[in-house]
Image 1 (cartoon, helix red, strand yellow):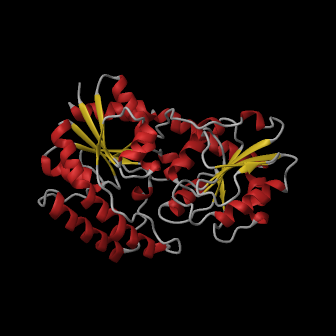
Image 2 (cartoon, rainbow, N blue to C red; image 1 turned 120 degrees about the horizontal axis):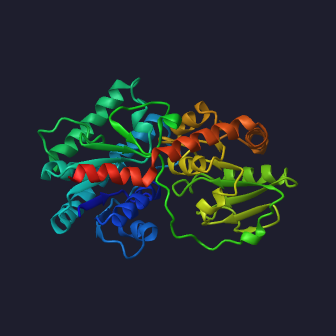
Image 3 (spheres, helix red, strand yellow; image 1 turned 90 degrees about the vertical axis):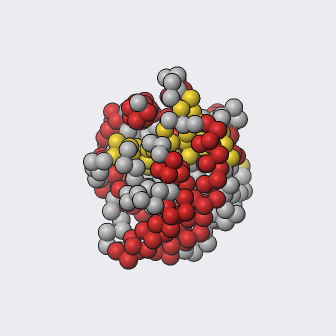
Length: 380
């Protein structure tokens, strides 16, 4: 039996892929513990999970108007860097108490990688988005150099100053929860396992509301964009109502920017059972968050993607390059553009065919069992 410590940021999309991996490791007789913010870990893994609390900075949300390089600078200055400093003492306590054989560190939880390298513990990178493998900064050398400076300062404080590799890319093992068929690249150092889909607690849902004679559209902007999505969600609802004879929509609104409720065409809820709904969905409209995209394509569902910020434009480009969806502009798309995009992915069979092609690649990659097998080899 080996011990695996999973170090995660307080972000749902970065915890979800490791839930299935943790369950698989435990089913194989290993012991798993978590280090991070207790609330999302308990919500997604369960209150019985063995976990060690790590502090987080008070400010982890960005001003909604930030885009591009400004948003990236904010992330590193106000989020990733401060998050690593805040989490490090909790990770240290977890290492002392749990004595892991392997640390699994999310790419945005740099404290996990840096503490592991300083303590001489093998660690694996958990890459819940493939944007870091895409070479997005190749045309911005000054930005890349600036990020290297921040990482270097973190390493001097928290890690092994003699190390020279980028801690976001473990020299021992990098697990990417996608495949080259979607990512459009094949980083040879990564182990491409596809999405790690696992059952998770699901809220109640009025299944009797669904009309099997109409196509189901799921609309979600994730949990981190509630400050920006009101207009977009309202336009999505309007586009579907214009197609009421053939479409129904479940619209996820965690921030309550719209009136919660339902009519015959649109159901608005703060939380939904996303995985069971994807089994019935004909299309998904989303912000191109990697978690939502991966889960949609795992079910072979084509997408309308409206990236907002961060890695989302990269993931949206991957979707369109794979032929599995249509991209619209988040800030400008109205009901006419959204309706046309939905019409395209629902009526042109090429989109569904491409989505199924990615689905087949995802499922062949092995998911959580493949990730667990790679981690077992690292622990030997």
